[in-house]
Length: 173
Image (cartoon, rainbow, N blue to C red; front, side):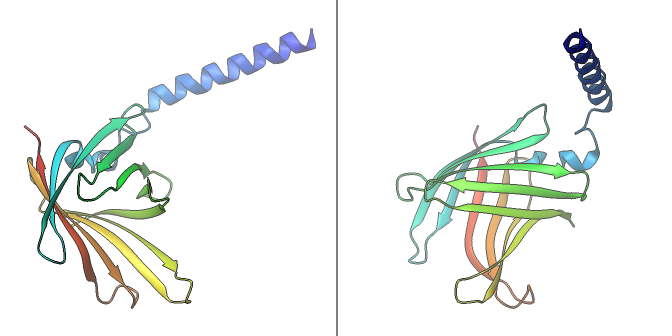
């Protein structure tokens, strides 16, 4: 009898909790839609250090009830990099958070926000030599069918930034 009571209690508790979550629409605040510019299927183009043009693709989707932005990156024939990221607006911190994993074994975690029409996500880490490095992604020139993305790094705490990689996005038609 005790187990029946516990089962009924748990069923009632979780039913009430799920109903409350559905009424609150956890990802309905305006900030949770700031990354919507990125959603879609994209052709990518970038220039290597020796001037060669390379191409890849990126497919960005909203998943899990619209709460999570999922990225599926493919570096194409000349760059065998494939990766996935998941981004979420964290209500508790008021910031965007993203994790990236890829077929080279990388795991990166970023935090950021939309500021002045640019989405900027960054991370800081210590290199094995003891130097601290900050990396950031900057999404800018946000249009309905195009945008630009910069991968930048700084070794002076963000006073100056070095461009490591720039990708031009064009929406697939």
